Each structure stands twice: as structure tokens, then as C-alpha cells.
Length: 113
Image (cartoon, rainbow, N blue to C red):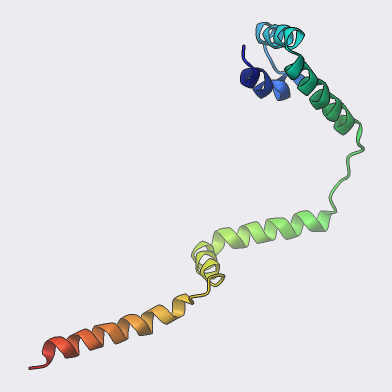
């Protein structure tokens, strides 16, 4: 097992989700690799600290606001896409008059004798 493979399995090892043979392979790599062992010690220390933090529950109004916005986003998906263009410097609404002017100009040039 190389360093990248061992580090990729840190999360599963911390959560005890690895099958026994794979967990043993990671642990044996940690026994022989100072760099990965140092990384594992820091990672597991952080995970233990986070597990001891008291969990806070979000206020009910927050969940309601978030879900309302999600539903609105789904309902007005194309409008949301249109609103995304408003962040750019070139407004989308100006495209129609410009395209119309170009079409009229092209017609006049082609229709001229």
C-alpha cells in the first residue's frame, strides 16, 4: 500500500467502516511509515475532538427558509438561469435589440441596388 492509498482510507478507518483485511493493511502501513503515521495521528486527533463537540440543532425557521428557497429554485429553474446572467456585465436583454438591428442592417445592405 502506498501513501496515497493509505491516506485515502483515513476517513473509513476513523469511522470503522473498513473490512478487517483492509484495515489491517492500513495499520501495517502506518506501523512502517512515519510520514503516514504522523498524518494519521493528526487526523484521528481531529476526528476525536470533533466527535466530542456538542451538536447544535438548527432553528426550525432556518430549515423552513432553506426548503422554501430550494422549492422556488426548482420551480423557477429557467428564471434562475436567467438571473444568473444578471451577474455579468453584458445584460442579456440587450441581445434582442442588437440582433434585430443587425438583421435589419443586413436586409438593407442586401436589398440595396
